[in-house]
Length: 320
Image 1 (cartoon, rainbow, N blue to C red):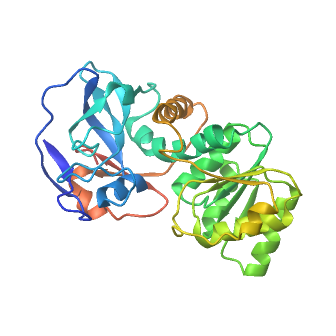
Image 2: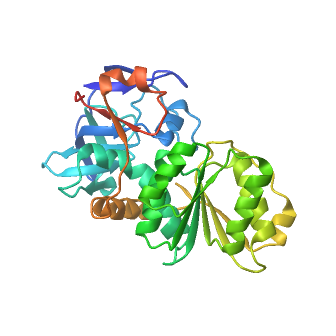
Image 3: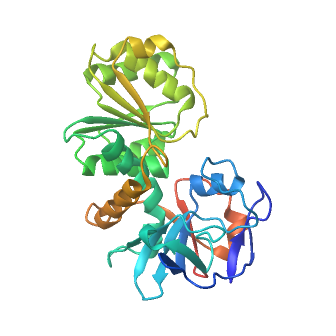
């Protein structure tokens, strides 16, 4: 079968031939793949750097995708069995990791929306325990995951959504999908501190952080100074686009009611992650969730492996 192949640690995948999966054991399913998105976790696992990477070579990348089971059921699938990833004509997946797709949700959109949508849905419902009417700040809202997080926070009942980012044009566009306030992280330090403290003083219940690094330090410092005493703030760490580490003074935790948590595989059980994905996929169309996509034939995987931007790259099996 045709597939994207990782042949050496850290190497860019190439398009080539790979032995198709043979017999299907009990509890497993064979999926004829339609689409598989290029996610941060897929890239990280392919490089061997992600904490969930398996390490065997060669293998097919792709932690998820959409396709059709042997019985004709359209599904979204998650965590195929190594070495068969989602970026191939066929993969093997545990039946428990397959979710039937609603007819109104297309293969490309389901593949594109699942992981970034799950990141905020799970963080809000499983880790933050969002209560309707609460205020949510999304740090790093101009990327595809953050933009979805704005939409999902509103859909799940947030009373006010604050979005931060560095791209002024992308920030402005977030008002159309639910952001009530936007804060540009690129402004000078004094102006940024004032803007953040003003919002924390008015009351923020949940922070979803996609960036970490300097902006997370700024947020935590502003929250420590401006959040009223003994008022809890649930700070949920999701991604580290701006850097893997921060400096956090111990006094920031002693002098505030900040609750610092992570959200992802390991902090949430796999059954709960799959439950979240099922909810997301069932509600995606009724909720009007949107995400920009760039549909690429899998044969062009090497040329597009490092693509970045607002549109989410989705590889399809021979479709343009």
